[in-house]
Image 1 (cartoon, rainbow, N blue to C red):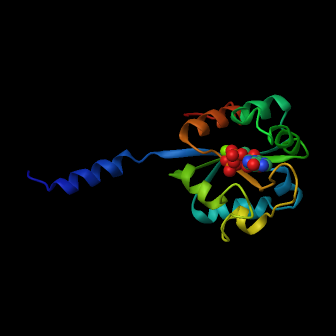
Image 2: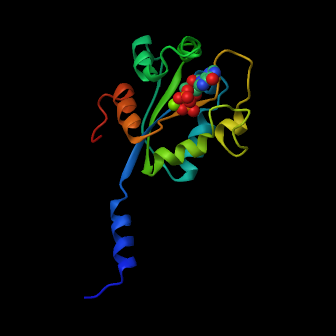
Image 3: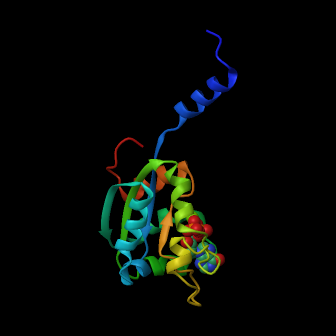
Length: 159
Ligand code: IDP
Ligand code: MG
């Protein structure tokens, strides 16, 4: 059969889409301000699925691993101290293109510049501290997601 080339290309692209998992953290500022439900609600309304969820107080060892790419930066120690300042919620969130999709839901790192409509844009502001307090973390690539999920959810299957 002589199918047009465009049909074959589209079929190949569609079949290559795979479901992804990303690590989302609700940071201590989000938990303290009772925004856990708000954040989860935005994730679920978007259509993503919560596949893992726990309230926890991460150890220094976990945070040093999680933030190893930032070691040596001026905000590293304030960031680790902030992340140990109270409980966090750790989640595995699942969906097609969820890694990119959750980063878009979260907005850019600096809440002053995060677009209205995003979690950081709507719910956070610069507090003048050495560390930017911006409610959530989301993995930035499939490699980061696999690495970070294995740190927070060592028993999570199929990565
Ligand atoms: P991301 O969370 O948007 O991926 P990263 O660059 O990976 O941003 O930084 C990790 C976290 O470190 C940020 O979410 C924020 O809390 C904090 N942070 C990043 N850059 C700065 C900075 O320039 N000053 C203070 N804190 C920062
Ligand atoms: Mg990051």
